Length: 186
Image (cartoon, rainbow, N blue to C red):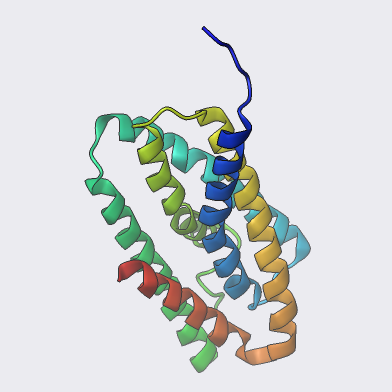
C-alpha cells in the first residue's frame, strides 16, 4: 500500500473547482460592493463567506453520502430565489430612495442570506464529493480560502466602481444580483 500525503493532480483539480465555485461570490461581491462598503466590513463578509464555503461542502459531503443527485437542482433554485429577492430589494431602494438600510447588509440576516446563496454551489459540489474518493479536507480548505479571497476582491472592485457611479450604484448592484439569481433559476 502506497501512502502519499499529496497528489499534485488532485490539488490542481480542486484548485480549479474552488476557483469556479468562488466566481459567484466574486461576481456578486462586485454588485454588493457598489452600494458602498468599509474595509472592515469587506473583511467580515469575506471571512463569513469563506466559512460558508467550508461548512456548506462539509454538509454536502455528509448529505451526499446518504442522498441522491436530485437535491442539487433544488439547491440552485433556492439560491436563485434568494439572490433575486435581494436584487429586487436593492432595486426598490435604489429607485425609490428608501432611507432604511438595504437588505444586503453586512450583518445579521442580510449577511447570512448572501453567504448562504453564494455557497450553495459548494453544497452541491460537496454532495458529489460525498459519493467519490477525494481529499475532502484539502477540498473544503481550498473552497474556504478561495471563497473568502474572491469575495474580498469582488467587494473591493465593486466599492471602487460604486464610487464612480454614485447614487446609481445600488440600482446597478441590484440588477447584477437579480441577473445572477435569474441565471440560477434557468
